[in-house]
Length: 83
Image (cartoon, rainbow, N blue to C red):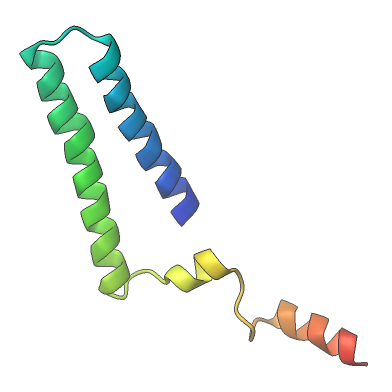
């Protein structure tokens, strides 16, 4: 799953929580669902991304910056420009 897809998913969860706060009646059940489902899920997702990034399990540069300068596609385009 790409970083863009994870960011979109986190936004959807956050929006759902805000929508429930705005639309549904104020009750302990609604607050419990928001706190444990929305906020808890976001905390878990951000903690997993933090561990993946700083634990060396994911490479943010590849997804964020595109292909590296040493990839065969980039090298072939640079070679074509030089000749």
